[in-house]
Length: 493
Image 1 (tube, rainbow, N blue to C red):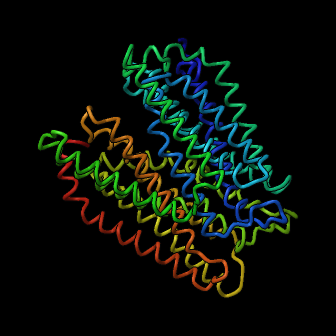
Image 2: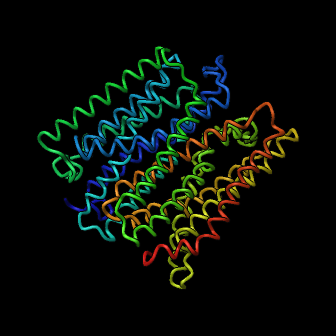
Image 3: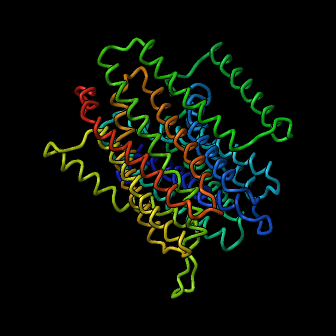
């Protein structure tokens, strides 16, 4: 393959734009989801109470991360990453179309399920194909992923802008329609340019691919699972099985937490670890907890903070005769990453030269504490709201800025150290645990957001301060523990 995309294989351009449009769709749809659910029926929404709507939001975002686990397995064992990405893109397009056209809640929720399945097929496998474009690894792979990451943030920046504007200009469902249209663009682009990928992501190159009788057996397992899932969904949508979104989210939280606990027990007791591997495993548990804590607060962005922007923020720019669409605030995170990621990358290198670079646990602690400090800003803003006034947008802007700083301390570091600290024979499983941590954080975020009562504005400052106390407090505890935890890392830097 000739290097024509910023000095990289042309296939990187295919993956860059596929992921860009997928993230456009995901973050764009996320920016308008809760606003649609709580909007009055007379305006085209479902008129759902905040607690239920945010629980649905938590289930949806958590499901998208959980689905990455079977999505990766299906690609590795049965169809290859390229086909998984194509099918996933089609599913996301179909799901958003259902959101845009379904007049009943049942059809709408079916659309959310279809999107979750599509994200599970596309998201992990498009990243896996990027790695296969660089069999030599090294710095060139790192550079390729950096370019790929730019595509993620372009999509994350543009998605809320377009869907938020469409929701205001053309109606509540127009945001979902816009997401469907642009995901379709991504699918078409991938289909007509995937020849640039060569064998990268093709099934014949899948190292874990089964053959013969084993492959037939795995297909049977898959079809039995699909059949049972379809039957379960049919029973749910027919009303044969009563569903309460809040109880479902609470139950899923306990199930995922138990899954994590059982896996780590197996890892330490029955996985045959060497002493050094067991010591590093303790660090993995600490990072897992830090990831859950961070995303519990961070994912308030699309739920409680989105509702705060809609109801309590003065978005009217009188001098421009323009009202800022609520969904536009969701673009701030990606915009700030563009601006500040190079600075953070430079800062870590500069500190390392002086032997001052914080350890991975310390960076995690800083990330959690920065996230918590953002909610200190929200507590002050909500105190103004409780006094009877709306607040200016800079309160939310400052909060998102602090959350972005926290993300830049935590997310890249977490992915890197989860690969460095994990024995190679457990690499795939531990990546699954990282997704599990993000999923658990998203579920908890939806449940916490449901505690904010629009009829009890006076309680909001204390509720935001609760998030400050637990996040900054636990972040400080992680910081105190970072030195002994660093010793458990051994020679890993």
